[in-house]
Image 1 (cartoon, rainbow, N blue to C red):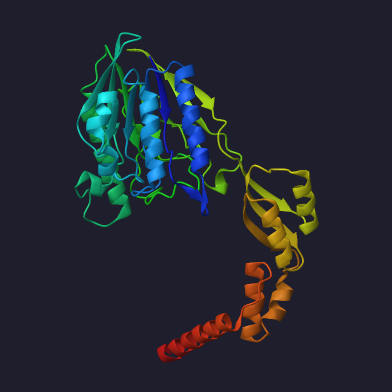
Image 2: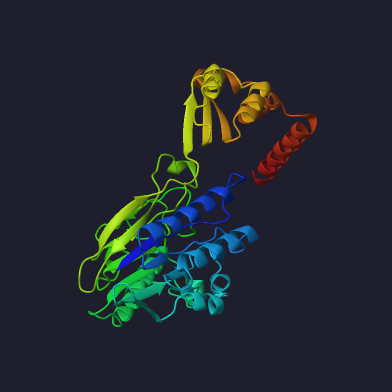
Length: 391
């Protein structure tokens, strides 16, 4: 049978306030096309459907529409679990209706093994589905010591026992897979995941993933990658779009898994073409930026722009650049002559002049007005009074 593994859609997420809904819809359309072209028997969505527990209505509508299209009126099985960004009850609220279309929505960790008959191959698929297992969602305290190392060990132990227990329901005559939304130690993360416990207590070892599963479909990390040291084939499919500039240049993809009972899974990565690229561009002066704009380079990208300058960037230049390229997110000056000697001289300046220079550099040429300056001096005065009282 052929499975399609995807995760971390983060529908409704923005980029510094810029909507990504159009790009997310492009991905969902491409995903449906891939499922049809690759003749996929089932779709595995490993968590973080939405970016917040209270997503915008447009994002929810996109999700439900896509689930219906993927299922093709029940001809294709679809199973999705809640990630750490999803509200588990909200995600699974439509289960009574979704089930009639062959769609399974799992919000909270449970002990049910989900089984599906695959008509095309006359095989049976068993899915061990573990949504994001935080202590609050498990409704149990794993450790009362408050120490991160002990909680990590207890968490890893809980996940290991869960997979061991669920593996007892696997059958050698079936295709057996597991799916979860977890952080596996040693994997490569990026700035855009924003999980609460990444690299912390909610971490499991690669060896903890169930060996009895022929494939483990993971969500949580946005870079597509296989899990090293796992005892079976395990993979993060990654996010469909780059959600932070730390992912600039990353190729996004979904994963196709071909597997049959008793045999190792074969994995194929399908690159995605949807969405705007994220570009980190450092220009040597404002004149280079103007040439870059005239040439139309990266015109359809989201851009993190840094400009090497000797002085602040004029407000007229900033306004022109932003008007000429709507995709520029940041404009950051990089001062070439900020030597330690210059800083030493500046330390001798009055505090209000130091603040004015700092404000100008941080804002790219702005000048603090009287209200801002008064507030700053008031805060400095309060700090000095507190320090004197403490002494």
